[in-house]
Image (cartoon, rainbow, N blue to C red; front, side, top):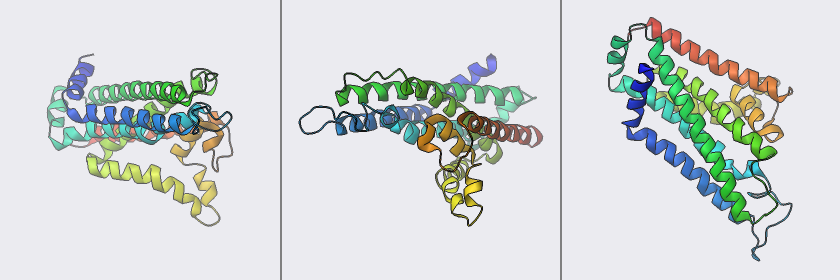
Length: 254
């Protein structure tokens, strides 16, 4: 508990976390406003059956997957690497010689924060896009909307575990963020271009499987198995990456 209190103080006394979480939620809401307005034709009546904020919950929360989750992950990376940058990690490990409780506490805190921030962004985006679309028959927290409300936070939480492990491995904010963004935004998409075996390899990409579990058929890509096997693969890779970061941190100097 003392470790969690210590990590909470670190997070709440730095501006970067506030800014990253606030910008993530703000961009999700702004995009939801645009989507909700886009669904209305010139007459102001909702376009029944057309994809948009009031008829497609996934479209309404596009900003959550595009901005909120990514910025929550970056906040976790900065939270870990900032201690190495300002050399406070040595004091942390001096007060916790076994190290793993401090690492576990930081991971747990940022995981919960990612879940909370993502859930808030999903709720606000669904409400705003639905209200602006004018579709009175749309219920945001049932069916697909309810599924996204819990799957997106879980997806963000597992990704936070992964990036925390990666941050402990690299110990540098710029390098960790660059590698991570290249991985999820470029590598996982480009690997399918490899002749003959590219599509088979692409099906095993962890974040592609996470997207498929979160968003359903819209993000299936080359994946041939079901949503829950995709979730298991995504979760396993995230946990393994964190475990590698933990082991490396326990074995090397601060």
